[in-house]
Length: 210
Ligand code: URA
Image (cartoon, rainbow, N blue to C red; front, top):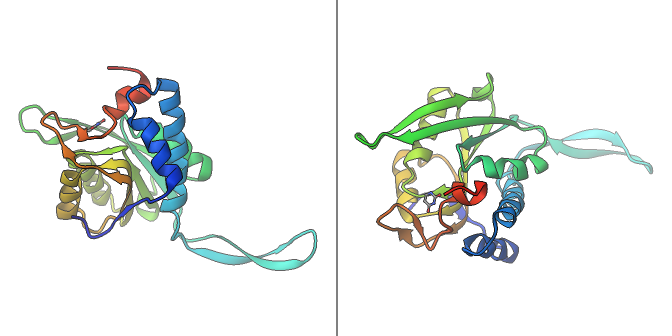
């Protein structure tokens, strides 16, 4: 499906995901749980960050201790649902910059068209983590990754709550070099483009719209 996809296997994650899937979950609970899951995903997606030893003094002794080194981080939210995951991730990664990409689907060509693009000026030097809760067809995620690559970004990871096999196939075809971290690989897309069983429209559920 994709050469580098990781589905998080953790009881806490599965439990929280069930809360999101439940149609009866209220907007405030949905938001809170997305934030909690996003923080857990920030922990998981940074598992392989480089560290270096620095000298420090504890209250007891001098020692060498590890700190994060290497490329600085930038989180990129694909608007609008990606915004809902940023707060939780930033709680764990307070130094990360945050960029935004807005895309819509042209109804005639069905191509993803960019309407907003705001990223740090040194984006090409950063480890970029692109965030979108739902990897459905994969078209907007793929367009966002292509845009970032055009800007010279060479280290990218993609984080989503739910992935459909169709979206993973798109990513495998167009961005096999980008590792994907997801909380669940669901069954399929329905005729309306929703992930099944899914959780509905992530943006609507986060922002209380319809
Ligand atoms: N986007 C969503 O918000 N939900 C889906 O199921 C598919 C795409």
